[in-house]
Structures are given as C-alpha cells and as structure tokens.
Amino acid sequence: MRNKKYRIAIIGLDGANKTTSKLIGIKSQLHDFVSTIPPYTPPAWTSIVTGVNPAKHGIIDFLKIDPRNFKSKLTTSYDVRYPRISEFLDVYGLRSILINLPMSYPFDGFRFRDNTIIVSDWAAPRQEIYPKKIKEKYNEYLIDPPHSWEKHKNNSREYAKLVEEFTNTRLTLYYELLEKHSWDLYFLVFSETDWFSHIFPQILEGKDTHLVSPVFRKIKKFIHDARDIADITFIVSDHGFEIKRKIFYVNQALARSGFIEYNEFKASLIRLGRRMLPPKIAKILMKKGITQMSHASNSQRRKAFFASHNTWGVYTTENSIKEQVKRALNSFPEISKVVSTEEIYTGPYLHLLPDLFIIPKKGVELSAELKRRLVEPIYKGDHEIHGVFSTYGEHIKDSIKFERLPRVYDIVPTILHIFGLPIPNDMDGRVLMEIFEEDSEFAKRKPKYVDPSYYEKNQEDEKLKKAIKNLKLKGKL
Image (cartoon, rainbow, N blue to C red; front, side):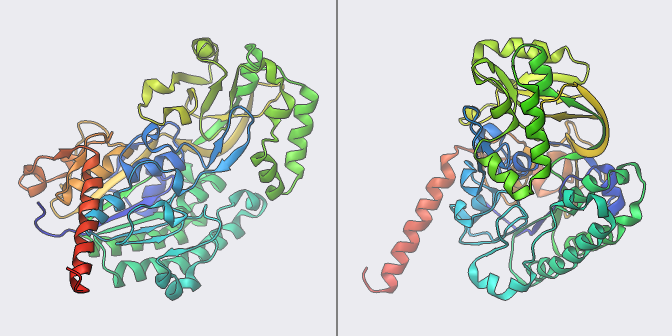
C-alpha cells in the first residue's frame, strides 16, 4: 500500500494568528485554519491529533465540570475517546515523536505506543518522557514550563526573559529527538506563541515586538531546520488570537433574562475572596465545586448558566428551555450567535459537552462572573476561531488555493493519505488534496476509507503474529 517512506513534521504554534506567524518569519503559504467551537487548546489540539470533533473525542476543557454540583476533575489523556494519529501509525510499525501535545499525559492513556516517544505538555503535573530510558537521558531538559503568565503581569519583561531561558533549554531536547532518533512523524507544539499573545496583546497590533523577537527567532530557526530534515512539514495552530476590547458577563445576562437568581452580596464576597486567595487554594476550591455560581445563586431557580469563558458553553437544566435561552442571549448586541451543540457536533460523547455555545462578536470577551453590570471595556489578547495553516515539502504546491478553508479535523486524514494508509470513515476531516502537485502520487491516488474497527482488527492481528513468533523462537511451536 505504501511506496516511498516519507517523514512528516508537524510544528504546532499554539494560539498563533497570521500576525504572530509573520513575526516568527512564516510569510508564504500562510492560510486561515478553522478551529473548534470553542477555539480552545484542549478540544482544538485533540481534534488536530484525532481528526474528529469534540463529540467524538470527548474533550472540551482542561476540567470536567459536573453541572449538577459544579465539582470538577482534571481532564487527562484517559479522557481522549478516539485514537490519535500516532496510534494509527503504531499499528503499521511507524514511529512517532510527540512533544508538548495537550492531553498526552499520563502516557498510559495511549493504547498503542510501542513505537512512540512522548514528551508531556505544560499542563502535566510534572515533566516526563516516555519511554523511561529516554527520560533518563534527557532529564536535565525537563524544566517546568513558565505557563502561568498571569503571575507576571506586573513584570512582563522579566517574564519574556524567563520564557527565553525555558525555550533555550527545551530546544536542546527538541533537536536531539529530531536529529538523533528514528521517526516517521515528528509532532512538536510551541506554547510560547500563546503565552506571549496573552501577556503582550500589543504584539497582535505589531507593537513592542522586540519583547518576543528573541524567542520567535529561535522558533523560526527550528522550523527551518525541521524542514531540511522532513520530507513534508506542516505548520498549524489550534486557534487564533485577537484583541478583546469589551467583556460581556454572560451569567449577568442570564440573570436579567430570568434564568438565574443570585445574591449580589455573596457574589461580590466570593469574587473578592478569589482574588485574595493563593492560586493553588482557589483551584482546590473550584475542584470541590465552591464557585461563585454554586454559592451565590439559588440552585432551585437556576435554569441555565455559563460555566467557563474558555468553553463558550451554556448548560441548561432541561431541554425544553434551550430555545428560550438562545432567543434571550441572541438579543444582546455583544453576541454573534448562539447555537445548540447538536447543530454543530455529532458523536457518542455529545452529552459531555455544554447544551449551547455562544459565539461572541469580534473583540468581545465572554465572562462567567456574576456582576451587576453587563459589559466593561478591556484591553487584552484572547482566543479567536481562525488559526494558521502552512505546508511545504516534496510534492507540495508552491502556491495553494483552497476550495474550502482547512480545518483542525483535516490534518490526520491528510497524513494518513500521504502514508498510504486507510482513513476511518467516521473522521470529520477531509484529505487536503489541494496541497499536492497535480502529477504527484498523492494527487493521483484516491483516499481509501475503512470502517473504524479496521485499525483495532489490524492491531489484534499484529499482536497474534508477535505471539506466534515468540512461541516459535522459544521452540514451543
């Protein structure tokens, strides 16, 4: 089925839009890349690495919130309910290296990883490498990522230096794995682009770019070096970024529309307490369900609530009021559209997602806080639905024109097609045929689709063959 053995590198730039991509030095073949709703790290990267929507892979947030009692648990690799690209490749003995990919820890969450090296992402409780023998060799490079940019708002220049030190140290590990290990797929995510876009929103307008240029130059060089080694390179981001100039308090809007009843004094007290508490204590309280919504609102009269600004999601107490909630929220000028989850997603894990998604207008930040006011002016950088896509290499066109914008679901089907492997027919993505030169084998070859059970069966067949081979070697057959 497969002819030449290709090496594919995917360089992820978390949160990069066209402005930050150009600051890094990516100026050609730069296209919009449509994210998930919400455009947020957990669902978007999981869709990039699986080829399916959140209702099929089950990930929407870093936390799993129980809407009945507001208690939450961390989302981990065990919660990813669909195979990742490395697991598909593993069935065929192809080797993958995954670095800093969200939802990749603990490593036992990967069912198939015999041919995979994994470096945990910034959200892991500790920095690890699988397998252990690799960790022992590179342990000195497993320094903690400086992802808590909020702590450094008052000393942002020092934060830029801290990120540069982290990048310098980690790059040694990235190069070692790139140059000294065998791989068919090399997948690395740089989170620095996201951190900088949060703490330095002005770079999204082309201002103060000197603060980020030392790190961005290093990322540019790494991309250039990876392109020299790989046959085909993809550069993708999980979502974009934009300047937010207005914050809209969704739960206050729901309260005014009669879906929430709350005590203003309690809400103010909890808000003040949360700001004064150390972040670790605040997180513990949140996990236990001690939130502004749980303690300030009347649970008997709470018909709908907005859980988190990151997920854009509204939960309702019963399906019969969903249309009422949609109509009420759609009446506010800060909201572009409110959609039912089943309007945009299908899959066995639809029940794990919010009931409604709010799509804000450009420049509007959504907040779950209960406040007396509906809106406030702000100036900050936050997520937006258009990330970036770029690709270069063997049999890739110099100038690509897309019939439809590429989406986060399209990466896995395209990679499987390049490797000459069948594509599960329940994937939501398509093979990006527009990127291939017309006379290339990739353009001439039609994508092959199979039942999702195909890879499971192949894996079982491979296990059986190995077992028989081992028995023969031991002289028992």
